[in-house]
Image 1 (tube, rainbow, N blue to C red):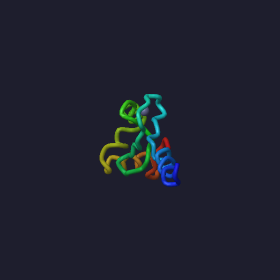
Image 2 (tube, rainbow, N blue to C red):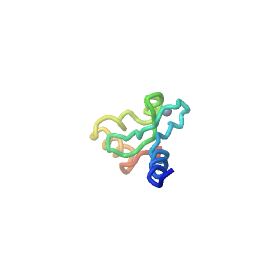
Image 3 (cartoon, helix red, strand yellow):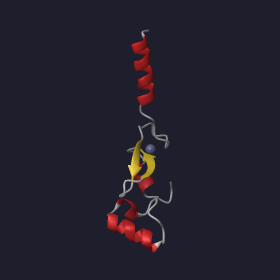
Image 4 (cartoon, helix red, strand yellow):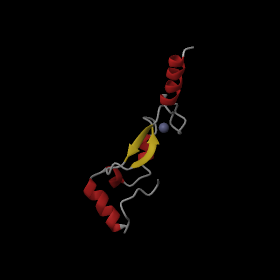
Length: 81
Ligand SMILES: [Zn+2]
């Protein structure tokens, strides 16, 4: 194996899909809220279920999100990070 092949092999491992922690065997992707703040890693199988753990406004409009933060006296940060 040449250095180039070795390097490609290493990069393939590095870039390979990381599977979702829910056990579905699906590759995971980042679920971000309406402000673009990372919430959780999800896959197609569990995205809906994981979203349900957050307030509806988390993925609604920016205005609703801000209003909720004000109502709770919170800074604009996700709760479950
Ligand atoms: Zn999943």
